[in-house]
Length: 278
Image (cartoon, rainbow, N blue to C red; front, side, top):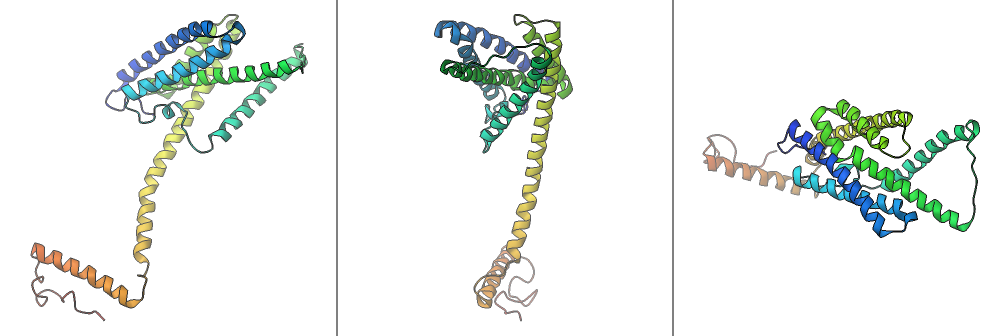
């Protein structure tokens, strides 16, 4: 994505960033209100996250399509449809759960957290519901804090400023949640900085790879054309000489058209195109 590339500049990118922040808070309020009336209390958090993902995805896609004329506004938010995305999602899920286990395991061993295993059928249903909830919550955070608004902010203040600004923005949003503290604010700030920096670096690597592919494509085409020109004409010497003679006739006709010397009869400037070269 390249926000404001259609003639905006940094000021326009900054205004688009402010609009993206406003859209985030509006989408949160709408998702919370609609979820209250659509589902039972135990399902409200899950429905709220699902509505928030849809509102953010469609809202930012509309902004990218309207303001920046993006051809693929959803893919520009970091969700491109490409082969192998299921494997990437599975890898991210595995890494995420591994990090969660690494973080929780010391608390279980040294912190006195008690874990109780419930193997009833209803518990497995709640496990699936919790997994879907956290997946939607993580997706909503990625769209909100590393999507369209973050990319506009990168265009406005640069990658480093955007990483610091969105890390503070993420920490402030997390501090508004019930039960937050100064410690949670510091953790959210550090986590937001790491994720924003990783997102900026990943997009820079992607742009560099795309640029290298575009620069290498003309060279590959030239090499392919050179190989085709060096290939012999199929069908033997007779057809090869016929192709050369047809080419010389086209050149001769062009010389006659522009009136070059030797193009009138062949004696003044060169042999006739029908003259056979030995």
